[in-house]
Image 1: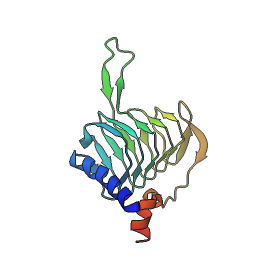
Image 2 (image 1 turned 60 degrees about the horizontal axis):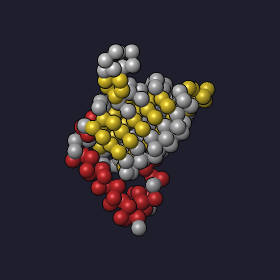
Image 3 (image 1 turned 120 degrees about the vertical axis):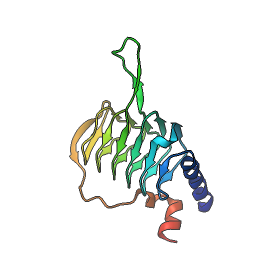
Amino acid sequence: MLFPNLLRRNRRHWKLARAGAHIDETAEFSRGKIMGRKNNLSVGKFSFVGRVSMSLHDEVRIGQYVCINDGVEILTASHDVADPRWTQFSRPVVIEDYVWIGIGAMILPGVTLGRGAVVGARAVVGRSVAPGEIVAGNPARPTGKKRSEQLNYNPCEYLAANRAWLVEG
């Protein structure tokens, strides 16, 4: 049972890479909707991307040791509501190392999530988040708590299929 799951995840990874995405070979992907120009996507080593929805109108740069849980939406484009012609714009999204994004959160165009930042479940993030900051809510606001600066973990290690092959194998 574990080996077929590993193959399925790797197939998704390879398919994205063949379409132009820049993905470290140790990054892990679940099923999801990744729409737009795949060459706008880059993912660092040992990052886990759950069942997410990503619109790649602009760059999405995901660092190392990042955990993006299921149901997260990452948007890189929107419309200017102040413009009578409702013109579309796009802005990159940058997710630095050791960021953890909770289930169902939404990351809006132009946001940078600093190293070690945490985004709470269902949060809507429209502004950049400082390194180590923990945000929650709609709109996302700082909780007043900070994360440790000494982060040293691998989110991919917790996946059962990987654990069997990478840790115990």
